[in-house]
Amino acid sequence: MSGRLYVVGTPIGNLSDFSPRAVQTLQEVDFIAAEDTRVTVKLLNRFDIHTPMVSYHKYNSRERGEEICRRLLDSENCAIVTDAGMPCISDPGELLVQKCAELGIEVCAVPGPTAVASALAISGLPTGRFTFEGFLSVNKVSRREHLNSLVKEQRTMIFYEAPHKLPNTLRDLYEAFGNRKLSIVRELTKIHEQVIRTTLEEAAEKYADGSVKGEIVLVIEGAKETEQQPETLEEAVALAKARVDGGMSPSAAAKEAAELTGFKKGLIYKELITK
Image (spheres, rainbow, N blue to C red):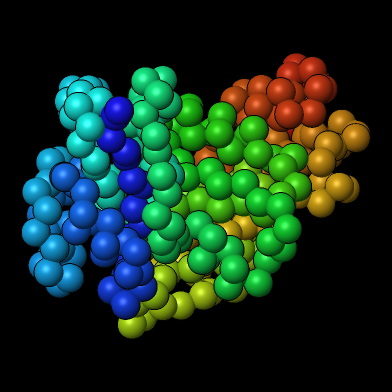
């Protein structure tokens, strides 16, 4: 009989959020797969946990994942943890769980803090339906495609972002979605926890200097039904113009607006350059 993989949530800031069940699980498993053993050892020391660790991260996930699965098939139990929050969410632990599922290895959840649900809960935006979009790509083409795919999304959208990338991200979000409500949730569960309730337009201008620091979650209002699809050529041209104003070339802006609206690129381009 194979062992079990335990997916264990760890604190996202406040160590008091670490559950007794999580502590017990980490004490009782045979080994812990940690994103960064240097980070996890501080948590283990704080709770007097002496279980051996192996590293498991995006750069060694294939080889180390196979090794972990071999040990699980040999009846050892393993707990996977990330540096903070729930493993396997926008995290390479997803691959390990998939591999365990393929091999028939039991996977158990030991729930813990997660920035996605916590940020949404205090954002002040609709919580009934939402979509978690993780981190935006730094590749400009992939980033634009990702944002374009969400223009008509009516659910509340949640993104993770690093503070040094926030100014560019706010500008790109405003360019893609227009002026929607935005909650910038920073430093969850920490001393300087803050919710900045604003709009994309205001935030793109006010925080262009990189003044917002710390771990950041962006919660953005979804599209209203009236925003879903420009119905006139004039609206399609306005969509392209907004992208030109954001630094895109007229040709690229016309192409993107055409893909989003169904109007011909040439028609949009002709109207765009005559305005």
